[in-house]
Length: 71
Image (cartoon, rainbow, N blue to C red; front, side):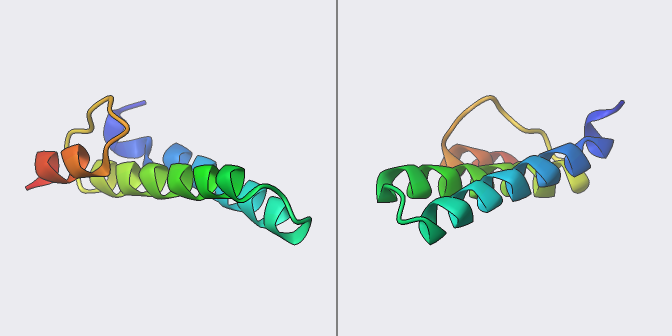
């Protein structure tokens, strides 16, 4: 599977992180863990966006580095 078609995998994983954050929030989970899952969802969604538009993604956990790669 090419990188450009892998964006669906990233989106599915982003939604899983959002679901985990929502479950934790609904059950009064630790806000640090909720924030972690929300951050992961944003990163994965951003990587899906880059792949969809055939931009390179880098193995980093910085949204700023990923944004610079796409400009």
